Structures are given as structure tokens and as C-alpha cells.
Length: 373
Ligand code: PHE
Image (cartoon, rainbow, N blue to C red; front, top):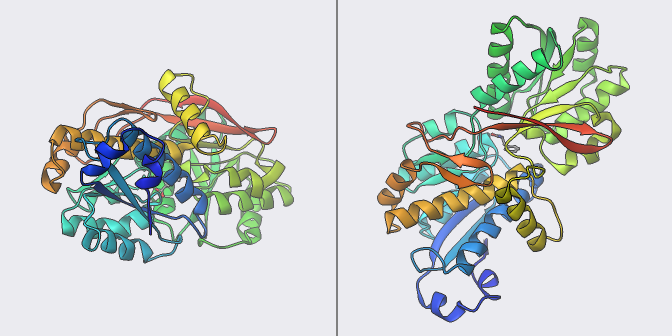
């Protein structure tokens, strides 16, 4: 486990005053290594930046915030194990994480049973917060994202018949496929065929050959960046020139590294764009670049940042770190202005925010449009 208190305090004057007070321990579960390392690292960098900014400004309730980060190695089962450790051994006041829905679904029951508030920055599957009243998220959910991409396919890509390629081992993928299909069909579109794969698969030629034979206008791939990029490359190798499109799981620099030129002309929806000219976003982008070697923050980084800030806001309003009071304050979150938009938590502990549609042009991500909830 890594602890991020002292490193974050060093540069600041308030060191003596702040370290005298007992730190507020916040746990973070992230995929820092393994298959979805891009997600975990981006989210962690955003989260840590928020904690450092909070500490530089005097902490929360006059106490420094200590971030205790556990790596689940992108492995199934590991998120529950490390969440348990953070709760029982470290006695964290809240848990931040996970990015991926399947892993948030593993850790949520631990948080709920212990009655420790958990905030997923970016898990979009509806089931995550349905685990219980201590589980929150600061992002939109997949029924909205599925609708956004169904409408985009129909209206902008002019697609009438589409193929859907789903990762059956991912709660996120299965859910997003379902919501997309419901909306696309309700709007008069046709799902010509569905193909399946499992996380970690590398060869998609069989699925793509079937899709080629079916003659569709576009392919929807509700999956994560590794498989999305491989599927797109192999589609091009098979001579398919039609548009491929997906959801926020596509968001990672690796999408372009793995997919190369094949990614040009693809589309996906996500939570934010660093091209957004609002002062809030631009000052976040500048602070992130200064902290992390000139890197540009992606959606996970932005949501990680907002998840920590929403927690700090709730603790400030609760005036205590007592779990039930923090839970109640989180549930009452209204109009919190963050870098991914306004967070208002509804009765199901979900946020409702705009989606950003991104395309790839000449090997680069390009913001297309924002779709309001
Ligand atoms: N929404 C995805 C999930 O629920 C995770 C994700 C979030 C991926 C943000 C990319 C960007 O699993």
C-alpha cells in the first residue's frame, strides 16, 4: 500500500500546523497494474492531485487528508480483499474507487456491510450503487450513455442496422450493450447480430467475419480500450471500412497506441473533454500537467479528482468524519461544481451529467459534441 500524506505536504508551509492534527484517512482502490492499468493510474493521479490541493489549502476540518492507495492489479476478487484491509485494518473514513463496474461491484458489499461510504468515480453500471445506501458515484450511468450512443448512431452516423460486440465477462459491457440495444430498437433501428467475447481475448476474426457477412452500417463495441482497439484493427484488416463506436471504456491513450491508424473515424462517449474551454476545466488541466509531467488528464483523471473533492465537500458539511454523518452529507450533495460538471446525487446515489462525444482524427482524440442529460 502507498500512503500519500507526507509527500503531498512537503512543499507547503502549513506542514507543522497540519501534521499536528490527526490525518483523515481515505482509502483508494485502483487498478495500478495489470490489464486496466491505464484506468487505475489516471484515476489515481486525479485523486491524488485533489488530496494535495486540499492539504495545501489547510486540509479538511483543519486536518490533513491521507490517501491510502491499494492496487488490485486489475484482478478479479482482489478489490474486495484490499477494500476489507482498508476498512478493518486502516479504519479509513471512506473508500474511493473502483473505475471498472465489475470491480466496484466486488468492493461495494464490503463498504456497505461496514457502513463506510464508498464513492466510485466512474463505474457506470446501475447495479453498483444499488448495492446499498453507503454506495455513491459521481458519474452518469449506462442507461443514459446507451441512449446517447444509440441516438448518435442513428442521427449522426445514419446507421440503420448495427452489430453489437459484447464482453460477456464484464458487467459494464453487458449493461451498456443492453441499454444501447433497447434505445436503438425503440428508435426504429435494427440489431442485425450480436457477437460475444471475453476479457483478455485477442483474436476477433470469427466474430468480425460473421459481421462482415451480415452487412451492417456500423459496429457498437461496449468494451474496454484493449479489446476495442484490437477489434477495430482486425475489422480494418478484414476490409470493413464502416464506423465502429463505443462508450467510456474506450477512453485511454492506449486506444490509439494499440489501434493505430485503424482508430481514425471511430467514436465514443465519455465524461469530459480536456478541450472544454471553461475556466474550471482549464485550471484543472493546467494543475494536472504541472503535477504529472505535462500529461493531459483524461476522463478517469477528472472523475478521480471530482470523487475526492465531493467527499471533502461532504465531510466539510458534515463537520465530522463519523461515517453515518458523512453518508448523509454525501446523499445531500447538490450542485457541487466540479471539473466533470455539476454533481447532484439523486435518490439512487447517482449523478446525472452530460456526455462528451469524442472521435479519432489523424491519430488524435477530438471533441465532437456534448450531450446534456
Ligand atoms: N464506466 C466504466 C465501467 O463502469 C469504467 C470507465 C470509466 C472507463 C471512465 C473509462 C472511463 O466499468
